[in-house]
Image (tube, rainbow, N blue to C red; front, top):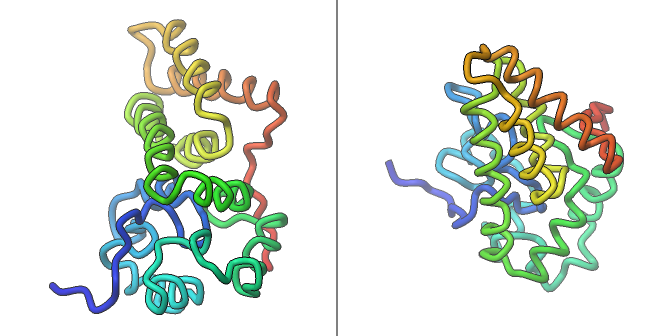
Length: 195
């Protein structure tokens, strides 16, 4: 099948700066699986994203962060304002910092940094997901600095018993991550206030 619309090279990075590759829907099988921002079949699920229409379709860029009109753009300003109040399947808290990081490192540099977080997430999902922890792990990988999270995961793995079942493993890992989040003052709960 030929895609009628342009695809992005880095669908794990949202046009708006969202961490699409750390979203639970990106790591889901079946009909609700999201291909990431402008990934294959994206337009069937998100046909009316105004940021995608502007950045990807009209300007041919991967992210609003790379747009020369960023400072005057009311569309991205609305997303940034909303990011201070609400989340969807994923936290919108990092959007402003992600935009700055994309501007600093470029889209490929930012995507490489995101791959480290995705690898940690896959490690957690493959080894410590009790069937109810995916959202928690996705949020933790998105919001907690990668070095601190990696160290906490290693610490928990050193303490896990080889004969522990998945519920015990998940409880130990979640407890370790929650203590880290408390220590660095990061709230891992999504804000589901509607706009």
